[in-house]
Length: 225
Image 1: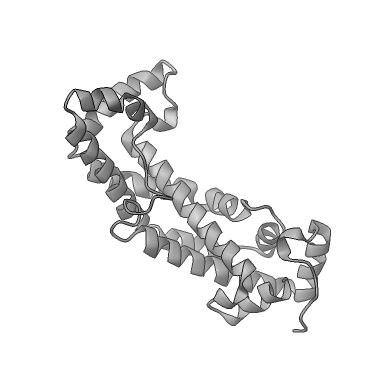
Image 2: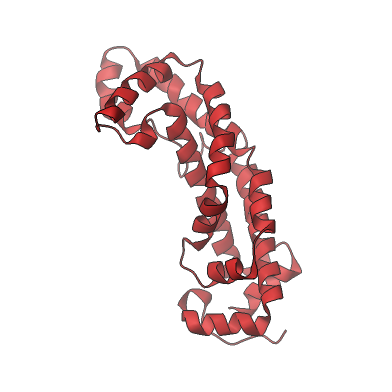
């Protein structure tokens, strides 16, 4: 394909970009984006799902739930430091184990992508990839993650104590409902990190198509530079 001399993708007006996609062909654009997201999902899962994928990565490491974080100085003063440290490790190990199970559902979401979905992502904002995966996989991945996370945190005594108190706090409106249990908190945090990582992979390939693993992806994003 003849190289198109246009402004970088992030600065192309939506109407102009939509016209460019039509010129590339909907089939090529969809195939290229599909390959890119499959590559991004695979990289995100293998990176985050490995040992220390969360725990040793400051950008995604899951902190203690905010209610515990606020109480941390007092709890440590009471000698609860080892329990806090144990819980911190447990919730990040739980996220690593859960993310490792995500690839089949992410792959299915990409394979089901329509031409309209692809155009929406390519002409959308910075969060278009994240929003696509949230819409397609949030519910099934939550159901898949929760048992894995629950198993990983069940042996930590402080987790059970937190759940009891947080449940009461949520009922009184003092704690967000999504943080009413360690399991819910870790699941939500792990999914946020997963979607963020896939989106970052996609943006990196937009900026440098040579990183793409397939000719279809390189063809599309190289034309858009």
